[in-house]
Amino acid sequence: MFGPRLFGLVKLGAGGIGSGLSVRREREKRMHFVVCIKQVPETTDVRINPETNTLIREGVAAIVNPFDTYAIEEALRLRERLGGKVTALSMGPPQAEAALREAISMGVDEGVLVSDRAFAGSDTWATSYTLAMAVRRMGEFDLILCGKQASDGDTAQVGPGIAAHLDLPQITYVRKIEEIDAHRIVAERLLEDGYEAIESPLPCVLTVVKEINEPRLPSLKGKLAARKATIPTWKAEDIRAEPDRIGLEGSPTKVVRIFTPPPREGGEVFRGEPGETVPQLVEKIQGIVLGSGG
Ligand code: FAD
Image (tube, rainbow, N blue to C red; front, side, top):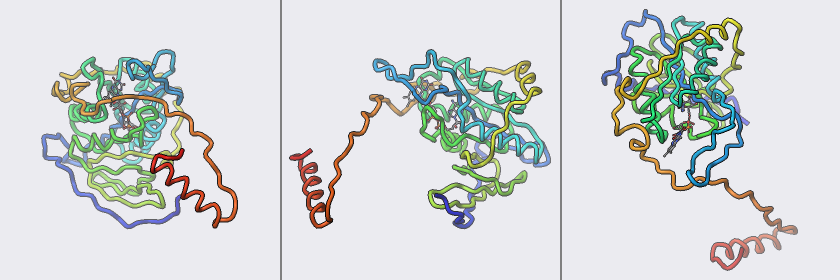
């Protein structure tokens, strides 16, 4: 259970926004919200090919990562409050375009797909580098919103990775945006036993949790816009990605083995008075630790 405890206001400094990023200086211009969305298998019953150690995607319907629908909704609410535009960005195979069309049907203004065979085998570091380079290519932006995590990969690393590659401040696990204007944001960050309020200059990266809002359903107008929308596909050279920082080559993580953990066995219950059961338990643990019991 999360109590309503507030752990003070933490202020973040500006990231290295002078490092080649074309960041908005004149705040009277339109705000630009970028939402990163990932297309994932619809099922939580993810199956692994034991020979290649890769996900079996055939025959599994694809959806927008559920956590990303909260990021989309929050970006739309910010646009309604502050004006500007929302761009959805996805990296994936050509069929990930469907995820971008779904975002447009919810009200997003534009979608951009980053897709190239050279990205195959990317780990979270290479994925976040690729997405960061695509954001750079977009030019001016104020806020990058991501879901808390992807329902298939589940690492929750890509949002923070994008912030690291762009040298921007980040606020993760955001459950509420308290204040925002063209220059700064104050957001509540979910903790295990409460929350903390973080203040950050813009631009920055947020990852959001499902407590933040209730995502809207696509509208008829949105569905028509989604059908008509032209979605550009950017390749590695379009985003000026360095060849040795993308795909398998640019991925420091090596997957040695992927497997489904065996189901837990029933365990053993010691019944009786503590004076009797505690020594039994200690003996059992000693046996396991010393390798003579099981
Ligand atoms: P998380 O970090 O849990 O996602 C957090 C948030 O980041 C999401 O809510 C979303 O907002 C954003 N996000 C994450 N991914 C994307 C995306 N692609 N586009 C836009 N926004 C995104 N996967 C493959 O599909 N093909 C491969 O060939 C492949 N090879 C891999 C090889 C290695 C060595 C490793 C370690 C992983 C590989 N993966 C591959 C998995 C891939 O790296 C991850 O799926 C990807 O990096 C995203 O990580 P995640 O799913 O844990 O996302």
